[in-house]
Amino acid sequence: MFHHKPELKSYPAIAMCILGMMFLTNIFNVGFQLRIGDVLTIISSFFYALQIVYFGYTATDSSPWIVAFMLGATQGIGGLIYSLLFERSTYGAINWPAAIGPIIILGIFASFGAQTMQIVGQKFTDATPAGLILMTESMFGSFFSVLFGFEPFTSNLLIGGILIVVAILMMQLNFGRLIFRKKS
Image (cartoon, rainbow, N blue to C red; front, side, top):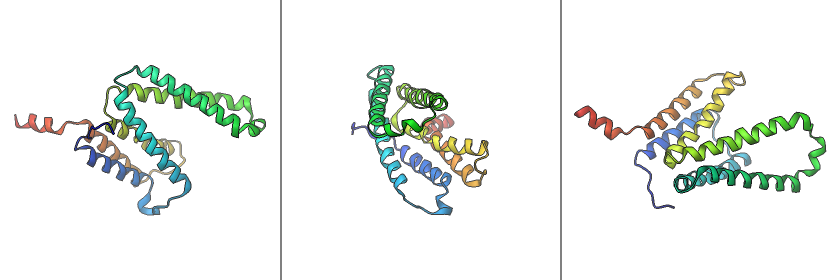
C-alpha cells in the first residue's frame, strides 16, 4: 500500500507467531472451527492491521497525541451514537452506580490509554514489529487466565508463548550485525 516491503526476516517471524497463536488456542488438539465470532474477529483483525500499517507511516509525520485524541473522540462519539440508536431500550436494566466505574476504567485506560501508547510507540518502530508485539495480547491473556486460576497451565500455553516471544526477538535483533561482529 505504501510501497514499502517488509524485511525478509518478517516472514518467518510472522509464521512463527501464527504458529504460537495456534498452540495458544489449542487448534492442534481441538481442531479448527470457524464460527461467526471467529469471522468477525478475522475481519476486525484485517482492519486493525491496516490501522497499524497506517499509523506506522503517519505517526512520524504528525503529533501522536493529536492522532490519539482525534481517534478517541471519534470512537467516543461513534460509540455514543450507536448506543443511543440501538441500546437505549436496555439502559433501564443497567445498575449504573455499579457499572460506571468499570466503564470509565475500561474506556479510559484499557481502550484510550492503550491505543495512545500504541500510537506513540509506533513513532519509534516499524509496523511489522509493532504488529508482532501486539500479538502478545493473547499470550498475556492466557498468562493471566492461568495466574488467576481460570484455566490450567499446559504445554501448549508454554510452547505458544515461547514461539511468540522468539518471533518478536527475531524481528528486533539484527542477525547480520551479530554475525558480522562474531567474524571480526
